[in-house]
Image 1: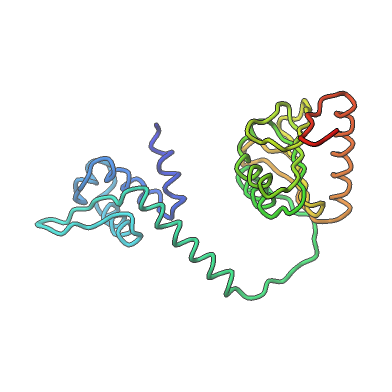
Image 2: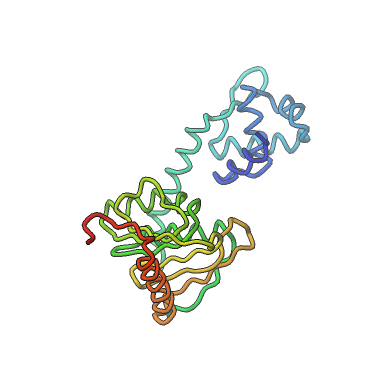
Length: 242
């Protein structure tokens, strides 16, 4: 596997790219001196020592005292758990201590970037209380299975429109629809809606809003589509439906 994939994942836990490269080198080779790490990575000794100091400060490496300073990587599971615990503590503190936020009237927001769109959709689903409508490709719906499963456990009504019925989502109403693989539409509690293109690209964009007119128009369009699907017999009935 390409080292850059490891580096990208490690930067999500607060390491710089150079620190992540040195961490990966330590992880593969056990304990190393700064000189050895520089030789193995091709990074200058001064930059290696700076990275090792950063790794030690961030809890990603231990310094072993001896005749020469040697470093060893903190186990990756331990490193990730520590970072997640610190983030959870920081989240609680911020929620309790941040000044009161100014609440603007709901407008129209353009969200750009595949990851940013997915993050917004995750949050919308987590906040759902009564019902959601989700139209997306089978692959995209599969990525949201944990959130959708939890919604069904919480007895939130889930209606899905896609080209193929997803597995492991018993209790969701499914409507088979074709030809919209890159389009995504999500409505939560008839209060917030998101629609646009989602392929995973940084160039993807979606429109998000809590404007009642926008939400109602999108909801009516999705309901009409579901009624048409029912008439053509492509809806899978959920338990208890006639």
